[in-house]
Amino acid sequence: MKKILWAGVFVALAGIGGQALAANAECDAKATEKKLAGAAKTSFLKKCEKDAAGGGAAASPAAAACEKSATDKKLHGAAAKAHIKKCTADAAASAPKS
Image 1 (cartoon, rainbow, N blue to C red):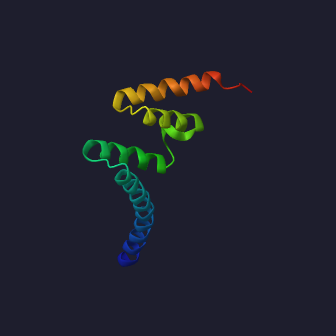
Image 2: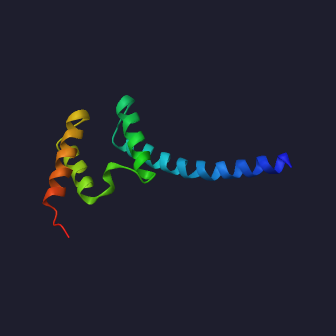
Protein backbone atom coordinates (compact mmCIF):
# COMPACT_ATOMS: atom_id res chain seq x y z
CA MET A 1 0.00 0.00 0.00
CA LYS A 2 2.86 2.39 0.81
CA LYS A 3 4.43 1.77 -2.60
CA ILE A 4 1.20 2.77 -4.36
CA LEU A 5 0.89 5.90 -2.23
CA TRP A 6 4.48 6.94 -2.92
CA ALA A 7 4.02 6.22 -6.62
CA GLY A 8 0.98 8.53 -6.66
CA VAL A 9 2.88 11.27 -4.86
CA PHE A 10 5.79 10.91 -7.26
CA VAL A 11 3.53 11.13 -10.33
CA ALA A 12 1.77 14.23 -8.94
CA LEU A 13 5.05 15.96 -8.16
CA ALA A 14 6.46 15.04 -11.55
CA GLY A 15 3.47 16.69 -13.25
CA ILE A 16 3.87 19.90 -11.26
CA GLY A 17 7.62 19.87 -11.72
CA GLY A 18 7.26 19.38 -15.46
CA GLN A 19 5.28 22.60 -15.79
CA ALA A 20 7.79 24.47 -13.66
CA LEU A 21 10.68 23.08 -15.71
CA ALA A 22 9.04 24.25 -18.93
CA ALA A 23 8.69 27.77 -17.53
CA ASN A 24 12.26 27.61 -16.17
CA ALA A 25 13.66 26.57 -19.55
CA GLU A 26 11.78 29.30 -21.39
CA CYS A 27 12.78 31.96 -18.86
CA ASP A 28 16.37 30.75 -18.83
CA ALA A 29 16.49 30.97 -22.62
CA LYS A 30 15.19 34.55 -22.48
CA ALA A 31 17.79 35.45 -19.84
CA THR A 32 20.56 33.98 -22.00
CA GLU A 33 19.25 35.87 -25.03
CA LYS A 34 19.40 39.11 -23.00
CA LYS A 35 22.92 38.16 -21.83
CA LEU A 36 21.96 38.49 -18.15
CA ALA A 37 24.20 37.22 -15.36
CA GLY A 38 24.41 37.30 -11.59
CA ALA A 39 21.79 39.25 -9.64
CA ALA A 40 20.18 40.63 -12.79
CA LYS A 41 19.61 37.11 -14.11
CA THR A 42 18.26 35.91 -10.75
CA SER A 43 15.84 38.83 -10.59
CA PHE A 44 14.76 38.33 -14.20
CA LEU A 45 14.18 34.60 -13.71
CA LYS A 46 12.13 35.21 -10.55
CA LYS A 47 9.89 37.72 -12.34
CA CYS A 48 9.66 35.62 -15.49
CA GLU A 49 8.61 32.52 -13.56
CA LYS A 50 6.07 34.54 -11.57
CA ASP A 51 4.61 35.90 -14.82
CA ALA A 52 4.55 32.42 -16.33
CA ALA A 53 2.61 31.18 -13.30
CA GLY A 54 -0.07 33.77 -14.02
CA GLY A 55 0.66 36.48 -11.49
CA GLY A 56 2.70 39.41 -12.56
CA ALA A 57 2.80 43.07 -13.27
CA ALA A 58 2.41 42.52 -17.01
CA ALA A 59 -1.19 41.34 -16.63
CA SER A 60 -2.53 44.21 -18.77
CA PRO A 61 -1.46 45.45 -22.18
CA ALA A 62 -0.68 48.85 -20.63
CA ALA A 63 1.70 47.27 -18.10
CA ALA A 64 3.42 45.34 -20.88
CA ALA A 65 3.81 48.53 -22.91
CA CYS A 66 5.20 50.34 -19.87
CA GLU A 67 7.71 47.54 -19.23
CA LYS A 68 8.80 47.73 -22.87
CA SER A 69 9.15 51.51 -22.53
CA ALA A 70 11.38 51.07 -19.47
CA THR A 71 13.50 48.54 -21.36
CA ASP A 72 13.75 50.82 -24.39
CA LYS A 73 14.92 53.67 -22.11
CA LYS A 74 17.45 51.25 -20.57
CA LEU A 75 16.07 51.80 -17.08
CA HIS A 76 16.95 49.31 -14.35
CA GLY A 77 16.13 48.69 -10.70
CA ALA A 78 14.28 51.42 -8.82
CA ALA A 79 14.19 53.74 -11.84
CA ALA A 80 12.49 51.08 -13.95
CA LYS A 81 10.00 50.26 -11.19
CA ALA A 82 9.14 53.94 -10.71
CA HIS A 83 8.73 54.45 -14.48
CA ILE A 84 6.48 51.38 -14.83
CA LYS A 85 4.39 52.39 -11.79
CA LYS A 86 3.86 55.95 -13.08
CA CYS A 87 3.28 54.78 -16.66
CA THR A 88 0.61 52.24 -15.66
CA ALA A 89 -1.07 54.78 -13.34
CA ASP A 90 -1.16 57.32 -16.18
CA ALA A 91 -2.56 54.70 -18.54
CA ALA A 92 -5.26 53.73 -16.03
CA ALA A 93 -6.18 57.40 -15.49
CA SER A 94 -6.51 58.08 -19.22
CA ALA A 95 -8.42 54.86 -19.95
CA PRO A 96 -12.10 55.42 -20.82
CA LYS A 97 -14.39 54.43 -17.95
CA SER A 98 -17.33 52.17 -18.73
